[in-house]
Image 1: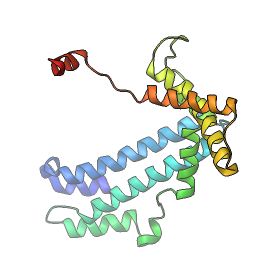
Image 2: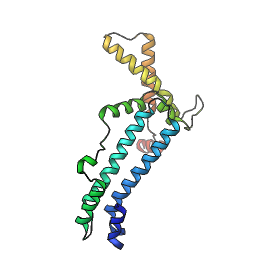
Image 3: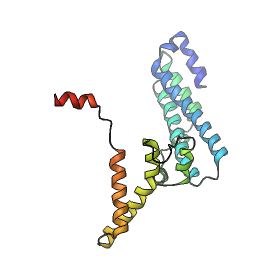
Image 4: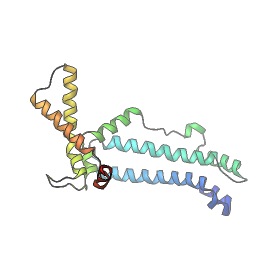
Length: 201
């Protein structure tokens, strides 16, 4: 129905960038939704994948819904008001009741954030196919992946120490120091030698 209404614009359609952009957003979200469901079907069984898929689908459904509604609200041309009404009747016949999709809840977003920022099967899935340098070789991506479990464990230890209001033992102090050293190394940026030399001169 939306496509048929667009043809009422004739040759003017290719100049309506805003309308075409909104429809492209809707189609893109629908396509990504199918791709997300296909990936879930292929990889189901991974712990946390259901939460990640639900979060992605809610966002994509909301994007497609909002794009179509925005297109109906701003339909151009001399038949714009009529086309807008017809489009709304076709896409949202009961008004807000037929626009059921909403952004993911904060609880779901927090759960997905936890899965992505702590060691989990979800992180292992995303790490598949990423090059891992041999041990002892400087490679930022490899170092970042290897540092995560150490830093997470160190954070747990530091939290426990604060709650218990005590000093860390030698093992805990060494773990926290190692995590701090890894963080400091990973956040360093390239320093070009010629720039340093130029300033000294």
